[in-house]
Amino acid sequence: MRFMMLMIPRGYETAAPGATPSPEAVAAMMKYNEALKEAGVLITLDGLHPPSMGVRVSFENGKPVVTDGPFTESKEVIGGYWMIDVTSREEAIAWAKRCPAANNETIEIRQVFEVTDFPPDVQKAAAGFAEMQHGLPVR
Image (cartoon, rainbow, N blue to C red; front, side, top):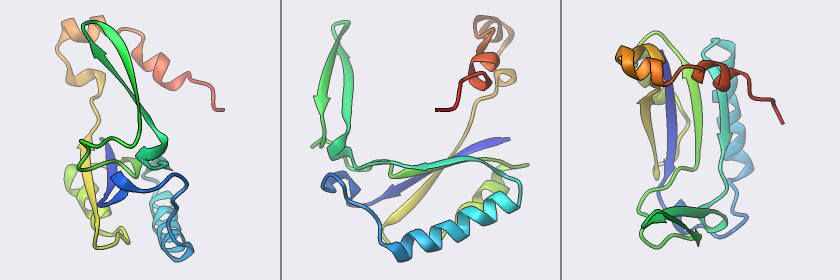
């Protein structure tokens, strides 16, 4: 079962462009990341720049509208993520509980849909999805 663990650092929604965590926080997180890797459950992970450096593309009346960050209506934003492959929801929770997160951070855990989770008509509509998913070149 694949799960995405989303790091939600409170206050990151207003972080200035170029804001980064401390070397101590990164070192602690690297130990955690290494534990995920050594356990064989880590698929991928990344940290994200603050929303002040992002853009949103919304669709109003069928037309794309681009809005530069920061986004005043945001209360929670994603600061980074891990994609893990574990045997159960409980195992995903156990890994999240081991994270060296700060007092202002929350991890949201979301199970990833597998094509087999969908009814046959949706599986048929998604034909070729797995090839797209695993056939992307690494940049």
